[in-house]
Amino acid sequence: MTFGPHIPQERRLVTAIPGPKSQEMLGRRSEATSASLGMAIPVFVSHAGGGVIVDIDGNSIIDMAAGIATVNVGNSADRVVANVKAAIEAFTHTCFTVAPYSGYVEVCEALNRITPGNFKKKSMLVNSGAEAVENAVKIARAATKRPAVVVFEHAYHGRTNLTMGMTAKNIPYKEGFGPFAPEIYRMPMAYPFRWVGDKDNVSAEALDMVTHKIEKEIGAHNVAAIVIEPIQGEGGFVVPPKGFLPGLAAYAKANGILFIADEVQTGFARTGNMFAVEDEGVEPDIMIMAKGIGGGLPIAGVTGRAEIMDVPVGSGIGGTFGGNPIACAAALGAIATIEEDGLVEKARHMGAIISAALESMKAKYAIVGDVRGRGAMQALEFILPGTMEPNTKAMQDIVKYCQQKGVLLLTAGTYSNVIRLLPPLVMPDHLLNEALAILDEAIAASNA
View 1 (cartoon, rainbow, N blue to C red):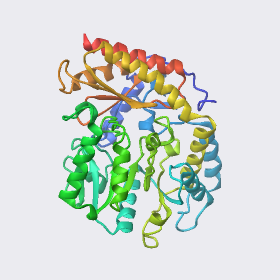
View 2 (cartoon, rainbow, N blue to C red; view 1 turned 180 degrees about the vertical axis):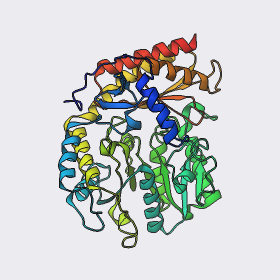
View 3 (cartoon, rainbow, N blue to C red; view 1 turned 60 degrees about the vertical axis):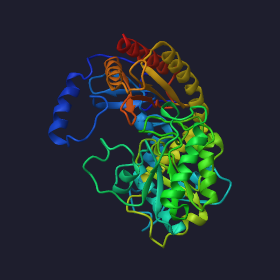
């Protein structure tokens, strides 16, 4: 396997972070772009591949973010690049709903094949995770003729109006942007670390609370869909306990409600399965996918039972750029890379390395309250020692320390106290171990 422009797989710092060229570009960014746009690390990228990002100052930084789980196959993956080059030389766009092309159909065929469920499926393609969520809700409402959508505490589903309403956290995602779409109902999440009831019985207690609230506050007969991330992303990599997802799916089926899995961040080998719901054998009525599907290009998909996907009125779903031919070519390259290079198994291998390291950190440092996740999607939640109080300052200090040492980390969590690890699945072991060792150093420094 090669990595883009044959980038050495090493951490290398030739300047401070940020270096002088990045500092100049930061000034230009400040003048040219909205101040509301976030930034995880103050460098500007020159090229990237494998497990590293190289900035314009020549620093080679270990990438533990993967574009928020977008480049699971790595930046500039061989098959993705080859497919995109061939596609862009042929044509850039026609709009699939104007003059269709084979790439769109081939991606949908692949999604129908690789998503869980031994039943006839159909798919549609759009541009982003939020757009996929919106279309899944539209399809569910059309199929059930019901208005209500059930979501969960700590959920993140996007930044459009409907998906902001479905998202739990106010700042930064919702503050000042309302009012939001109606008929969205938020339920308690089975969050084991912060569960206030019987911590040995979280799944059953949470299911009882959710089903009771649906029955009494909405009416199950009014619910079109239950939408849930199998492992919550922006909410802090909250992993529901065993039995919670199958219990929700069973309740949905018994009440004519569609069970929708939002696999935008968890999909495409990230958790050690192609999709996270496979861990407990759940077969969603509708799957929402984005991020890792396109190897870095913007594409998303909605896959569901064929009889559901066929319900909306003709031309009721679609869009100008959805399933753009270049993005479809990239998606086919990414899916082939995952399957042919064994990246599901690689994610499990990386997960074992990460779990061992994080559990060691938890045992050593009182500020680490919880370690959770699966595969190459894991997190640490930081607390004030001896309490359950979120420790945002420790999280911030640790991220800054790692940045200065050339390791890119992402934060998350409703309480802004979680560091999440999302390395590209093609990262070599020596880089992963080096990043984890620096994270350990950072926690030790913060814990002192």
